[in-house]
Amino acid sequence: MPKQERFKTDYPGVFFIEGTRIGTDEPERIYYISYRKGGKKIEEKAGRQFQDDMTPARASRIRARKIDGDALTNQEQRDTEKAKEEAEKGRWTVDRLWEEYKQGRVKNKALVTDRSRYNLYLKKAFGHKEPREILALDVERVKRDLSKKKAPQTVLSTLNLLTWIVNFGVKNGLCVGLSFKVNKPEVHNEKTEDLTQDQLSRLLKAIEENQHPLAGNMMKLALFTGMRRGELFKLQWEHVDFERGFIAIVDPKGKVPQKIPLNNAARDLLQKHPRTEGSPFVFPGRFGEMTNIRQAVNAIKDKAKLPKDFRALHGLRHTYASALASSGKVDLYTLQKLMTHKTPRMTQRYAHLRDEALKAASNLAGELFQPAEKKEPSKVISLVKNS
Image: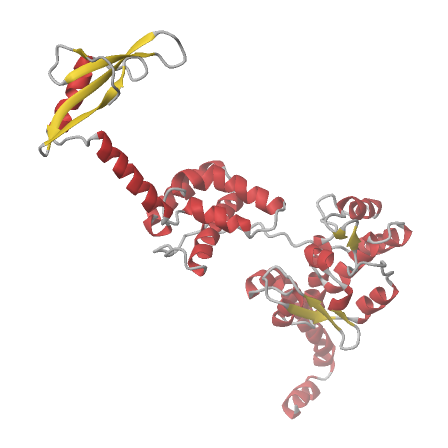
Protein backbone atom coordinates (compact mmCIF):
# COMPACT_ATOMS: atom_id res chain seq x y z
CA MET A 1 0.00 0.00 0.00
CA PRO A 2 1.65 3.33 -1.03
CA LYS A 3 2.32 5.79 1.75
CA GLN A 4 -0.01 8.52 0.54
CA GLU A 5 -2.78 10.50 2.19
CA ARG A 6 -5.98 8.47 2.45
CA PHE A 7 -9.43 9.96 2.05
CA LYS A 8 -12.44 8.33 3.64
CA THR A 9 -15.72 7.80 1.81
CA ASP A 10 -19.30 7.36 3.05
CA TYR A 11 -18.85 3.57 2.66
CA PRO A 12 -17.18 1.57 5.46
CA GLY A 13 -13.84 0.05 4.44
CA VAL A 14 -13.62 2.11 1.26
CA PHE A 15 -11.11 4.92 0.83
CA PHE A 16 -9.16 6.53 -1.98
CA ILE A 17 -5.88 8.26 -2.69
CA GLU A 18 -5.25 11.03 -5.19
CA GLY A 19 -3.38 9.93 -8.29
CA THR A 20 -2.89 11.12 -11.88
CA ARG A 21 -4.99 9.99 -14.78
CA ILE A 22 -2.85 7.77 -17.02
CA GLY A 23 -1.52 9.65 -20.05
CA THR A 24 -2.57 13.07 -18.70
CA ASP A 25 -1.86 15.49 -15.88
CA GLU A 26 -5.47 15.34 -14.66
CA PRO A 27 -6.11 14.14 -11.10
CA GLU A 28 -7.81 10.77 -10.62
CA ARG A 29 -9.05 8.93 -7.55
CA ILE A 30 -7.74 5.41 -6.94
CA TYR A 31 -10.11 3.45 -4.70
CA TYR A 32 -9.06 0.83 -2.15
CA ILE A 33 -10.97 -1.51 0.10
CA SER A 34 -10.08 -2.79 3.55
CA TYR A 35 -11.54 -5.94 5.15
CA ARG A 36 -10.66 -9.05 7.13
CA LYS A 37 -10.58 -12.61 5.78
CA GLY A 38 -9.53 -15.61 7.85
CA GLY A 39 -8.53 -13.28 10.67
CA LYS A 40 -6.12 -11.45 8.39
CA LYS A 41 -6.48 -7.78 7.51
CA ILE A 42 -6.41 -7.15 3.76
CA GLU A 43 -6.08 -3.84 1.94
CA GLU A 44 -6.19 -3.94 -1.86
CA LYS A 45 -6.92 -1.85 -4.87
CA ALA A 46 -10.52 -1.81 -6.15
CA GLY A 47 -9.95 0.31 -9.26
CA ARG A 48 -9.33 3.70 -10.80
CA GLN A 49 -11.97 6.41 -11.10
CA PHE A 50 -11.81 6.85 -14.90
CA GLN A 51 -9.92 3.88 -16.26
CA ASP A 52 -12.06 1.33 -14.38
CA ASP A 53 -15.16 3.51 -13.98
CA MET A 54 -14.84 2.93 -10.23
CA THR A 55 -17.02 4.64 -7.63
CA PRO A 56 -17.25 4.29 -3.83
CA ALA A 57 -20.52 2.35 -4.23
CA ARG A 58 -18.99 -0.14 -6.70
CA ALA A 59 -15.93 -0.55 -4.45
CA SER A 60 -18.23 -1.28 -1.52
CA ARG A 61 -20.08 -3.99 -3.46
CA ILE A 62 -16.74 -5.58 -4.43
CA ARG A 63 -15.70 -5.50 -0.74
CA ALA A 64 -18.96 -7.20 0.32
CA ARG A 65 -18.52 -10.02 -2.23
CA LYS A 66 -15.00 -10.68 -1.02
CA ILE A 67 -16.03 -10.72 2.64
CA ASP A 68 -18.81 -13.23 1.79
CA GLY A 69 -16.37 -15.41 -0.15
CA ASP A 70 -18.13 -14.83 -3.48
CA ALA A 71 -14.97 -13.30 -4.99
CA LEU A 72 -11.25 -13.96 -4.60
CA THR A 73 -8.84 -11.51 -3.07
CA ASN A 74 -6.49 -9.79 -5.52
CA GLN A 75 -3.63 -12.02 -4.35
CA GLU A 76 -5.76 -15.14 -4.77
CA GLN A 77 -6.64 -14.02 -8.30
CA ARG A 78 -2.95 -13.53 -9.10
CA ASP A 79 -2.09 -16.94 -7.65
CA THR A 80 -4.90 -18.58 -9.64
CA GLU A 81 -3.80 -16.94 -12.88
CA LYS A 82 -0.20 -17.96 -12.26
CA ALA A 83 -1.24 -21.56 -11.56
CA LYS A 84 -3.34 -21.54 -14.72
CA GLU A 85 -0.39 -20.27 -16.75
CA GLU A 86 1.82 -23.01 -15.31
CA ALA A 87 -0.82 -25.61 -16.13
CA GLU A 88 -1.16 -24.25 -19.66
CA LYS A 89 2.56 -24.77 -20.23
CA GLY A 90 2.06 -28.49 -19.77
CA ARG A 91 -1.02 -28.68 -22.02
CA TRP A 92 -0.56 -29.61 -25.65
CA THR A 93 -3.46 -27.72 -27.13
CA VAL A 94 -4.21 -27.89 -30.85
CA ASP A 95 -2.68 -24.41 -31.18
CA ARG A 96 0.54 -25.61 -29.61
CA LEU A 97 0.55 -28.82 -31.65
CA TRP A 98 0.02 -26.81 -34.85
CA GLU A 99 3.02 -24.59 -34.07
CA GLU A 100 5.20 -27.66 -33.57
CA TYR A 101 3.72 -29.55 -36.53
CA LYS A 102 4.34 -26.81 -39.07
CA GLN A 103 8.01 -26.53 -38.06
CA GLY A 104 8.62 -29.89 -39.73
CA ARG A 105 6.79 -28.96 -42.92
CA VAL A 106 8.50 -27.79 -46.08
CA LYS A 107 7.88 -24.07 -46.53
CA ASN A 108 5.97 -24.16 -49.80
CA LYS A 109 2.59 -23.27 -51.27
CA ALA A 110 0.91 -26.22 -49.53
CA LEU A 111 2.03 -24.95 -46.11
CA VAL A 112 0.73 -21.46 -46.92
CA THR A 113 -2.65 -22.98 -47.83
CA ASP A 114 -2.74 -25.10 -44.66
CA ARG A 115 -1.82 -22.09 -42.51
CA SER A 116 -4.73 -20.18 -44.02
CA ARG A 117 -7.13 -23.10 -43.44
CA TYR A 118 -5.99 -23.45 -39.84
CA ASN A 119 -6.39 -19.77 -39.01
CA LEU A 120 -9.74 -19.43 -40.79
CA TYR A 121 -11.51 -22.68 -39.90
CA LEU A 122 -9.79 -24.55 -37.04
CA LYS A 123 -8.12 -22.11 -34.65
CA LYS A 124 -11.25 -20.57 -33.12
CA ALA A 125 -13.03 -23.89 -32.58
CA PHE A 126 -10.13 -26.10 -31.48
CA GLY A 127 -7.01 -24.01 -30.87
CA HIS A 128 -7.49 -23.69 -27.11
CA LYS A 129 -8.41 -27.34 -26.60
CA GLU A 130 -6.39 -30.48 -26.13
CA PRO A 131 -7.39 -33.21 -28.63
CA ARG A 132 -8.94 -35.30 -25.80
CA GLU A 133 -11.26 -32.36 -25.01
CA ILE A 134 -12.67 -32.20 -28.55
CA LEU A 135 -16.09 -33.77 -29.00
CA ALA A 136 -17.46 -35.35 -32.16
CA LEU A 137 -20.22 -32.73 -32.06
CA ASP A 138 -17.58 -29.95 -32.13
CA VAL A 139 -16.15 -31.32 -35.37
CA GLU A 140 -19.61 -31.86 -36.88
CA ARG A 141 -20.51 -28.23 -36.19
CA VAL A 142 -17.39 -26.98 -37.96
CA LYS A 143 -18.02 -29.40 -40.82
CA ARG A 144 -21.66 -28.30 -41.14
CA ASP A 145 -20.86 -24.57 -41.04
CA LEU A 146 -18.01 -24.94 -43.51
CA SER A 147 -20.13 -27.00 -45.91
CA LYS A 148 -22.56 -24.09 -46.24
CA LYS A 149 -19.85 -21.82 -47.62
CA LYS A 150 -17.12 -23.98 -49.13
CA ALA A 151 -16.70 -26.82 -51.63
CA PRO A 152 -16.52 -30.43 -50.35
CA GLN A 153 -12.79 -30.54 -51.18
CA THR A 154 -12.11 -27.58 -48.87
CA VAL A 155 -14.10 -29.23 -46.08
CA LEU A 156 -12.18 -32.49 -46.58
CA SER A 157 -8.80 -30.74 -46.66
CA THR A 158 -9.62 -28.82 -43.47
CA LEU A 159 -10.67 -31.95 -41.57
CA ASN A 160 -7.61 -33.76 -42.91
CA LEU A 161 -5.43 -30.98 -41.51
CA LEU A 162 -7.03 -31.36 -38.07
CA THR A 163 -6.38 -35.12 -38.04
CA TRP A 164 -2.80 -34.64 -39.29
CA ILE A 165 -2.07 -32.21 -36.44
CA VAL A 166 -3.55 -34.53 -33.82
CA ASN A 167 -1.85 -37.61 -35.27
CA PHE A 168 1.46 -35.71 -35.16
CA GLY A 169 0.95 -35.10 -31.46
CA VAL A 170 0.04 -38.73 -30.76
CA LYS A 171 2.97 -40.05 -32.79
CA ASN A 172 5.41 -37.89 -30.81
CA GLY A 173 3.89 -38.72 -27.42
CA LEU A 174 2.64 -35.18 -26.82
CA CYS A 175 -1.05 -35.89 -26.39
CA VAL A 176 -3.87 -38.41 -26.45
CA GLY A 177 -5.72 -38.66 -29.75
CA LEU A 178 -9.35 -37.97 -30.55
CA SER A 179 -11.83 -40.35 -28.95
CA PHE A 180 -13.78 -40.73 -32.19
CA LYS A 181 -13.27 -41.10 -35.91
CA VAL A 182 -13.71 -37.88 -37.90
CA ASN A 183 -16.53 -38.32 -40.40
CA LYS A 184 -15.18 -36.74 -43.58
CA PRO A 185 -17.19 -35.88 -46.70
CA GLU A 186 -16.77 -37.88 -49.87
CA VAL A 187 -15.28 -35.94 -52.75
CA HIS A 188 -15.81 -37.08 -56.32
CA ASN A 189 -13.65 -34.63 -58.23
CA GLU A 190 -10.75 -36.84 -59.23
CA LYS A 191 -9.64 -35.80 -62.66
CA THR A 192 -8.25 -38.41 -65.04
CA GLU A 193 -6.54 -36.67 -67.94
CA ASP A 194 -5.77 -38.41 -71.21
CA LEU A 195 -4.61 -37.50 -74.70
CA THR A 196 -5.71 -38.82 -78.07
CA GLN A 197 -3.17 -40.23 -80.49
CA ASP A 198 -3.35 -37.05 -82.54
CA GLN A 199 -2.76 -34.88 -79.45
CA LEU A 200 0.20 -37.06 -78.44
CA SER A 201 1.71 -36.70 -81.90
CA ARG A 202 1.36 -32.90 -81.74
CA LEU A 203 2.89 -32.87 -78.25
CA LEU A 204 5.95 -34.91 -79.26
CA LYS A 205 6.42 -32.68 -82.33
CA ALA A 206 6.20 -29.54 -80.14
CA ILE A 207 8.78 -31.02 -77.77
CA GLU A 208 11.20 -31.68 -80.62
CA GLU A 209 10.81 -28.10 -81.86
CA ASN A 210 11.22 -26.53 -78.40
CA GLN A 211 14.63 -25.12 -77.46
CA HIS A 212 14.38 -25.37 -73.65
CA PRO A 213 17.17 -27.68 -72.39
CA LEU A 214 15.04 -29.47 -69.75
CA ALA A 215 11.29 -29.01 -70.29
CA GLY A 216 10.85 -31.39 -73.21
CA ASN A 217 12.79 -34.27 -71.66
CA MET A 218 10.99 -33.78 -68.35
CA MET A 219 7.63 -34.06 -70.11
CA LYS A 220 8.79 -37.15 -71.98
CA LEU A 221 9.99 -38.82 -68.78
CA ALA A 222 6.62 -38.09 -67.13
CA LEU A 223 4.93 -39.74 -70.12
CA PHE A 224 7.30 -42.75 -70.22
CA THR A 225 7.32 -43.48 -66.47
CA GLY A 226 4.29 -41.79 -64.87
CA MET A 227 6.52 -39.98 -62.36
CA ARG A 228 5.06 -37.10 -60.39
CA ARG A 229 6.29 -33.55 -60.90
CA GLY A 230 7.92 -33.44 -57.44
CA GLU A 231 9.65 -36.75 -58.10
CA LEU A 232 11.05 -35.41 -61.36
CA PHE A 233 12.30 -32.28 -59.59
CA LYS A 234 14.06 -34.39 -56.94
CA LEU A 235 15.47 -37.00 -59.32
CA GLN A 236 19.25 -37.34 -59.09
CA TRP A 237 21.59 -39.33 -61.31
CA GLU A 238 22.47 -41.65 -58.45
CA HIS A 239 18.80 -42.67 -58.30
CA VAL A 240 18.94 -44.03 -61.87
CA ASP A 241 20.23 -47.62 -61.90
CA PHE A 242 21.06 -48.27 -65.57
CA GLU A 243 22.59 -51.66 -64.74
CA ARG A 244 19.62 -53.16 -62.88
CA GLY A 245 17.04 -51.15 -64.78
CA PHE A 246 15.28 -49.20 -61.99
CA ILE A 247 14.62 -45.61 -60.93
CA ALA A 248 14.59 -44.99 -57.16
CA ILE A 249 11.80 -42.74 -55.91
CA VAL A 250 13.50 -41.52 -52.75
CA ASP A 251 10.88 -39.10 -51.49
CA PRO A 252 7.53 -40.02 -53.00
CA LYS A 253 4.17 -38.74 -51.83
CA GLY A 254 3.74 -41.56 -49.33
CA LYS A 255 7.19 -40.99 -47.77
CA VAL A 256 8.07 -44.68 -48.24
CA PRO A 257 11.10 -45.25 -50.55
CA GLN A 258 10.07 -47.09 -53.71
CA LYS A 259 11.43 -47.92 -57.14
CA ILE A 260 9.96 -48.17 -60.60
CA PRO A 261 11.27 -49.98 -63.70
CA LEU A 262 13.54 -48.08 -66.07
CA ASN A 263 11.83 -48.99 -69.34
CA ASN A 264 13.60 -48.81 -72.70
CA ALA A 265 12.12 -45.45 -73.68
CA ALA A 266 13.13 -43.84 -70.36
CA ARG A 267 16.59 -45.47 -70.51
CA ASP A 268 17.24 -44.12 -74.00
CA LEU A 269 16.03 -40.66 -72.99
CA LEU A 270 18.22 -40.47 -69.87
CA GLN A 271 21.32 -41.85 -71.59
CA LYS A 272 21.08 -39.03 -74.14
CA HIS A 273 20.06 -36.37 -71.60
CA PRO A 274 22.88 -33.86 -70.88
CA ARG A 275 24.39 -33.80 -67.40
CA THR A 276 24.97 -30.46 -65.69
CA GLU A 277 28.47 -30.21 -64.27
CA GLY A 278 28.52 -29.81 -60.51
CA SER A 279 24.84 -30.75 -60.05
CA PRO A 280 23.57 -34.15 -58.87
CA PHE A 281 20.10 -33.46 -60.31
CA VAL A 282 18.85 -34.82 -63.62
CA PHE A 283 16.75 -31.66 -64.04
CA PRO A 284 18.62 -29.03 -62.00
CA GLY A 285 17.33 -25.62 -61.05
CA ARG A 286 19.37 -22.45 -60.91
CA PHE A 287 20.30 -22.94 -57.26
CA GLY A 288 20.11 -26.71 -56.84
CA GLU A 289 16.81 -28.58 -56.96
CA MET A 290 14.27 -27.53 -59.57
CA THR A 291 11.30 -25.71 -58.04
CA ASN A 292 9.28 -24.46 -61.01
CA ILE A 293 9.18 -25.14 -64.75
CA ARG A 294 5.55 -24.23 -65.38
CA GLN A 295 6.17 -21.51 -67.96
CA ALA A 296 8.41 -23.72 -70.12
CA VAL A 297 6.18 -26.82 -70.13
CA ASN A 298 3.03 -24.74 -70.67
CA ALA A 299 4.66 -23.17 -73.71
CA ILE A 300 5.07 -26.67 -75.18
CA LYS A 301 1.51 -27.59 -74.21
CA ASP A 302 0.15 -24.48 -75.91
CA LYS A 303 2.26 -25.10 -79.02
CA ALA A 304 0.75 -28.62 -79.25
CA LYS A 305 -2.74 -27.09 -78.87
CA LEU A 306 -3.64 -29.35 -75.95
CA PRO A 307 -6.78 -28.60 -73.88
CA LYS A 308 -6.39 -25.55 -71.63
CA ASP A 309 -7.21 -27.56 -68.47
CA PHE A 310 -4.65 -30.26 -69.28
CA ARG A 311 -1.84 -30.13 -66.70
CA ALA A 312 1.44 -30.23 -68.58
CA LEU A 313 3.24 -32.66 -66.23
CA HIS A 314 0.61 -34.28 -64.03
CA GLY A 315 -1.63 -34.83 -67.03
CA LEU A 316 1.11 -36.89 -68.68
CA ARG A 317 1.25 -39.09 -65.57
CA HIS A 318 -2.46 -39.79 -66.09
CA THR A 319 -1.89 -40.38 -69.81
CA TYR A 320 0.75 -42.99 -68.94
CA ALA A 321 -1.62 -44.79 -66.56
CA SER A 322 -4.58 -44.56 -68.94
CA ALA A 323 -2.56 -46.08 -71.79
CA LEU A 324 -1.51 -49.04 -69.64
CA ALA A 325 -5.02 -49.62 -68.33
CA SER A 326 -6.54 -49.34 -71.81
CA SER A 327 -4.11 -51.92 -73.19
CA GLY A 328 -5.83 -54.65 -71.20
CA LYS A 329 -2.41 -56.18 -70.54
CA VAL A 330 -1.78 -54.59 -67.15
CA ASP A 331 -3.81 -55.51 -64.06
CA LEU A 332 -4.73 -52.84 -61.51
CA TYR A 333 -2.37 -54.22 -58.84
CA THR A 334 0.60 -53.87 -61.21
CA LEU A 335 -0.61 -50.41 -62.23
CA GLN A 336 -0.81 -49.42 -58.57
CA LYS A 337 2.84 -50.42 -58.08
CA LEU A 338 3.96 -48.59 -61.22
CA MET A 339 2.11 -45.44 -60.13
CA THR A 340 3.46 -45.81 -56.54
CA HIS A 341 -0.04 -45.37 -55.13
CA LYS A 342 -0.16 -46.22 -51.43
CA THR A 343 -3.60 -47.79 -51.69
CA PRO A 344 -5.69 -49.26 -54.54
CA ARG A 345 -8.26 -46.46 -54.16
CA MET A 346 -6.33 -44.01 -56.35
CA THR A 347 -5.76 -46.66 -59.01
CA GLN A 348 -9.48 -47.46 -59.21
CA ARG A 349 -10.05 -44.35 -61.34
CA TYR A 350 -8.50 -46.31 -64.24
CA ALA A 351 -10.62 -49.45 -63.67
CA HIS A 352 -13.21 -48.46 -66.27
CA LEU A 353 -10.48 -48.25 -68.93
CA ARG A 354 -9.33 -51.77 -68.15
CA ASP A 355 -12.95 -52.96 -68.17
CA GLU A 356 -13.40 -51.49 -71.64
CA ALA A 357 -10.26 -53.29 -72.82
CA LEU A 358 -11.58 -56.57 -71.41
CA LYS A 359 -14.94 -56.01 -73.11
CA ALA A 360 -13.18 -55.35 -76.39
CA ALA A 361 -11.19 -58.58 -76.01
CA SER A 362 -14.38 -60.47 -75.20
CA ASN A 363 -16.13 -59.00 -78.21
CA LEU A 364 -13.17 -60.04 -80.34
CA ALA A 365 -13.63 -63.63 -79.19
CA GLY A 366 -17.29 -63.42 -80.13
CA GLU A 367 -16.43 -62.09 -83.57
CA LEU A 368 -13.91 -64.90 -84.11
CA PHE A 369 -16.43 -67.61 -83.25
CA GLN A 370 -19.49 -66.08 -84.90
CA PRO A 371 -18.53 -66.78 -88.56
CA ALA A 372 -17.57 -70.36 -87.68
CA GLU A 373 -20.83 -70.84 -85.82
CA LYS A 374 -22.83 -69.85 -88.89
CA LYS A 375 -20.86 -72.11 -91.23
CA GLU A 376 -19.93 -75.17 -89.19
CA PRO A 377 -21.58 -75.19 -85.73
CA SER A 378 -20.73 -78.85 -85.05
CA LYS A 379 -17.01 -78.22 -85.46
CA VAL A 380 -17.12 -75.27 -83.07
CA ILE A 381 -18.83 -77.38 -80.39
CA SER A 382 -16.29 -80.14 -80.96
CA LEU A 383 -13.41 -77.71 -80.59
CA VAL A 384 -14.80 -76.35 -77.31
CA LYS A 385 -15.24 -79.89 -75.89
CA ASN A 386 -11.76 -80.98 -76.92
CA SER A 387 -10.22 -77.91 -75.27
